[in-house]
Length: 117
Image 1 (cartoon, rainbow, N blue to C red):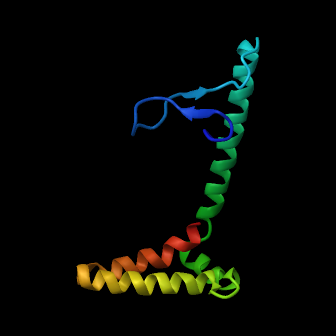
Image 2: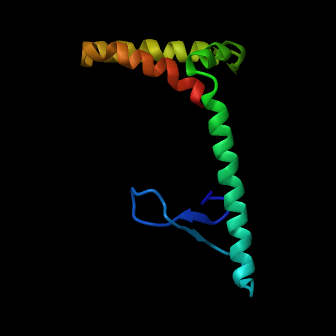
């Protein structure tokens, strides 16, 4: 939001924002009406985000992984599923050398990270 609309979180770094700062592109006499308009836009965006987040929770990530088989990553490189498998294989290779106890966890993370994008 802060890149496109001039809205950025307020409060201390690392804390959940308790307020928001809004930048107006043109300093006119908008006053309270401008503030209310920005607040309305922000509420709508947060409402949309909450809705899509709740919708995403309805389908487990494991089921979303199978959908990657239908998504072409790049014509010559295959599907997003194949890309995830290559990434998982590479990460497993390094995990085995760094700490073999982490290999299984690293593979699981690689398996689930792609469908979240």
